Length: 389
Image 1 (cartoon, helix red, strand yellow):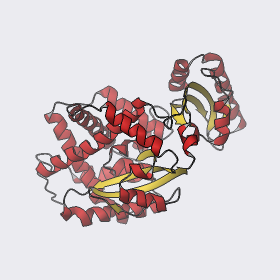
Image 2 (cartoon, one colour):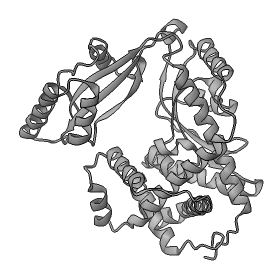
Image 3 (cartoon, rainbow, N blue to C red):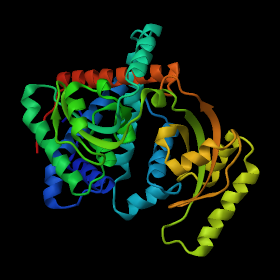
Image 4 (cartoon, one colour):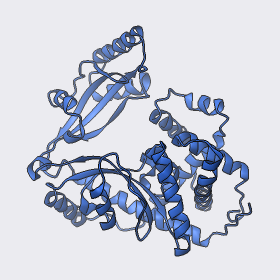
């Protein structure tokens, strides 16, 4: 019971199955028993978020839910509509996924509403952040992913630590970090698989920075206790460079359309993908057209976004640096398909490639994260929760 609403045994079993399948966790009776407590805690938090949204008259529209489902399909390289087929074929309850998405959408709206009531980000804050970027530009940076498990009161410490240790074991046995983060992490980065991007030691809490410094790329940390709870950290990549190199690192705004083929695709399938990529070169005269083509003809792997030069593989970086803005590239054969790239813009360095807007966005995201944790902690403290099984 969560206040006056029920989470049933069926709900818990259905969510456990969904979590194990999406996270690549082995489906055994022992595993189900180990992860059930944390899955139940996630269900309780979702119920509290949905109840608060109802009290505040905040809802998720059909359009928002459909967009969320499409994003899941894209993340898993599925064609439109394939997610429903996939869940039906494995006997999964689609309602569990919809409930999870709904809670995520309305919770983001609630936190945003709360944040709007606080003071806006000042120019002084942005100036100070940019100053720190320049001062630490020559330091090594690590691309880090996180899973955060909150400890709201000392009595929960042992329980939450056990959950962190169980998740560590599951990931070492093959569970995907990004999928586990989406299901269990209580940080705002859960939506992007826990990826917080490239960070310097001074941008992390001391205990986290110390742990990151000892990890190699691809290595998972043990549970790390902080004042708010436990962290699991995964170092995805590491980069180094002098102050001048970091400060001058350009940023490329890129659109990529990729026509996929399977790893064991025959020659006919490969020729078909190549022909479609060639057609894009003739049709796409600007970035808006490239985006439309990607969404219409190849939504699974097509993408857009900003990347610094150091985030791009060396061979691909040479191609992108030589490309004129607004002109489609020659088809590029990749391991999972044939792609066409267009550079929509290039920003020179000076602050590590960061604009004032991007710095403000980073500060705002950190505020959101802190506010969301405090908001949910308060809801837990005032809730009536009774576990009867």
